[in-house]
Length: 590
Image (cartoon, rainbow, N blue to C red):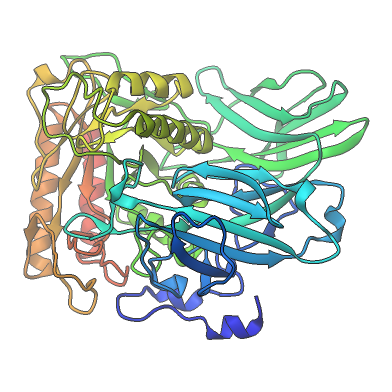
């Protein structure tokens, strides 16, 4: 990319922007290290202006391009500099050149993609190096044999994305946005980067805290491991080593943590990890990580009620439904500060929980939740048909076989990718019947992948009696079903609220609006919100142990956010909201 190209870039005008748009650097947007849970010193960020083209789907390669696009902002957003559309009959193509650092010669080179929506193929110097399906999970290719160090290398990417014309996971994306469904997101939407590694290197680290036994279990997946390896792991509290282990054979370690400092929203303490691997007394891999000591579980039944426990103590969870959309970047926050802000303001307003709704965020979003101290319920991105009947046995044939395969593959990738983020305490595979199928089998799959977290099998609607949670959606007032429906599971209000207030000059331009209850001013909105909090308190004694308010911000046609879509205005008095929210936790303890 030339400096001249960067000078010409600007967001596409015509709709809302956040103030962070002015901070986007077209020479390298989102420069932060993209994988905080496995952080090596050497890497190369490939974000910036790339060539792009939109061509018929059946074209196998392109010879010319249509212009410049700012990666990693999706095609349809203002910050891409394009704000285009992609049809099911088309492919989106990318190209950029890059030079290799000379000191990386002789290393294995990994090409990483944070996320690309949806079906991706990749070429290096005209040689195809791999493909991937799925719009929400990271993937990488080892590209060493295709690289040269005496000139520029060519990277070409093609993406096909059918959005709502296919059965794949897509969240709330549609080609024709309306109501609670939003603008499509196509192509690269998270950081693209290169990383040098030795022939012997760690491919994945799995960190499992055990609060009851005061230890941390660490498992390493090592590529090309040798018999003479020496593995050193150090657990640190700031710069002080509190526990360590040195081994030459094991790949799984149980490391004691005496007098552990537990992670919670009130005290989100994180231990640092330092891991080094030697072969023949030479360091072949070294990286840093971190973890939080926390346990999530369910209480024994008492008077027909079971509750959610954090570190063996009851906790009332109160959070927001968070769509993760931005007016200028759609799926992609304009900057890392913007990404962090949504979490910070949620915590500041007195919430201790975020339900990440039918979207998976970049790893740095979960890193900020870990650091700031916010619990996370993580949805799987919905896709397929909206189920509207309970006559089918567990909806076993609700999605095509190929779509079911794609679902299970992406579900597995999501859980493995996010496993070490200990702010995540619950998996939510289905929401309100959207693409729900084989609910019992899906829950069993999740349990096999992760037995340490809770499963909310179907948030809001069709409950087949599996999973750990009984969840009900109710707008605007929170409600609770008869205790006979709990089936010995904790009860949560998976969604409620949706109170709306439109603020001029902070609205997405659309003819299609959605709100559950609209208010003419902030005072009346505040009074109604206060009544909802009172209702929640009444439900606590009947079994409710968590609730999710809709929602963090306005999104396109939805006008029911605590904040405007551009994050410029908090609609209600923030101190009053905070005091009301904090009163829930005190009431739960009495």
